[in-house]
Amino acid sequence: MIDVRRSADRYRGGAPGSGIESLHAFSFGRHYDPDNLRFGAILACNEERLRPGAGFDEHPHSHTEIVTWVVTGELTHRDSQGHATVVRPGDVQRLSAAGGVRHVERNDGHEDLVFVQMWLAPLAPGGDPSYEIVHGIADSTPYALPEAGAMLHVRRLTAGERSAVPDAAAVYVHVVRGEVRLEKAELGPGDSARVTDAEGLELTAGAGAAEVLVWELG
Image (cartoon, helix red, strand yellow):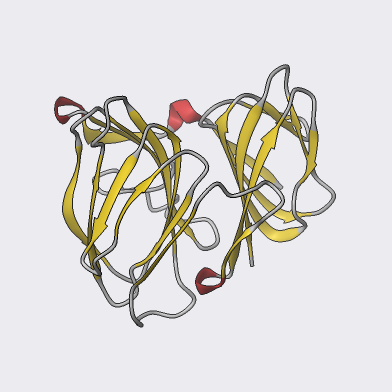
C-alpha cells in the first residue's frame, strides 16, 4: 500500500518573525494529531528553513535518533558532548540523543539554509549519546542506523532514470527536489509516501533531475 502525503498538507510551524519556517509531516508540538504520530520508527520529518543568523537555541533531546540532510546552505551544529561541526549539502549528520543531550542548530552562513531533519525511535531507550557526520555520501552507500533498525538510501536521479525501492515491510519516501513517479503516484518537492509491504517498486525521475531520501524500515 502506498499512502501519499502532500507538501501542502504539512503542519506549519517555526517562528517566521525570527527567520524560522518549519513544515512538519507528523504530529509535532502544538500540531497534535493522534492519527499521525509515527510511521514505523519515524517520529518526525521536518523541513526547516532558516534565514541567515536564525537558529534554534540550545535545547534538549532524549531517546531519539536525529538524522539531518542539508538541501541548501550550511548548518552549524554544537552539542553538550563537545561536537562542533558545519553540515553541508551531501552530508549525513546523526545525533543519537540516548539518555539525554543538548544541542544548538544555527544558520551562521550568508545564504538561506534549508534542511530536512528526521527523528527515529531507537529500539531500546537509554545509553550514551553519540554523534557522527558522513561527508559527501554516495548514492551507492546506504547509511545504516542500527539503533533504530533502519537504513537511509539517498537517490539522486537524472531525468527519466529509474531506481529500485528497497523490498521491506515499511519504506518512507521523501522528495527533496525534482519530481518522481512511484508506481502511479506523482510526487513533487516536499511530498512523501508511506509504503507498507514494499516489493518490486521503482522510483522514476520526471523531466529533470531529482533527489529523494528513502528510509528502509525494519
